[in-house]
Image 1 (cartoon, one colour):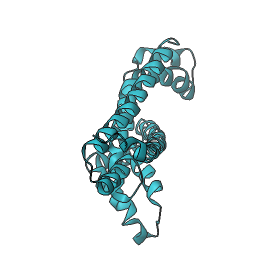
Image 2: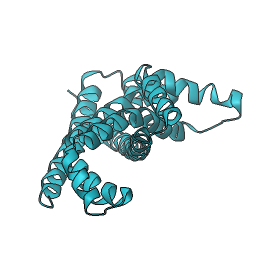
Image 3: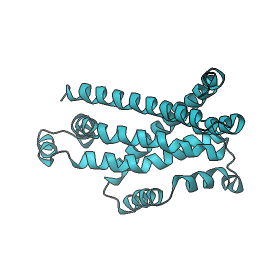
Length: 216
């Protein structure tokens, strides 16, 4: 073990961690928005829209995220879509995560007791009022654990962004290994930084879940 390793490469590793956190946060946020929209559209009584939503979910869940990234990054210019690596990384994580978030939101909406919805209708609540005052508040509490788990999965999936040259933690670690010819220290440092990031997200998710539960 080289005691000077972290002095030399610590700033690079932390910069890579920053990119990982940045891309994962934007990708997760984008995926949550997509997932919520798809889940709400799937609940509409329109067969064509439900079919489109289902097709998107099955297509994304049925293909590796690496293939999806390649299609956006390398095939995109053929269709006039030229994006930098970080933008592609955010879009890729968002589009991929959106399919899974859509299923999480759908399950959350379906878990609301029908009796509450029927009672609200009897009291004269509109569909939008039922959605915003009854369904969404309860759904948010129910879906926090699986949603946090999906965010953690996206953070780990972000490692594949190194393939399209995003300077995230895995890419930086690979560069350090090639430069220093060290194996143990770089990969141990990478594993520790991923672990710290994921444990932070899990801790924040637990606190959010407890806080949201107080309002029910």
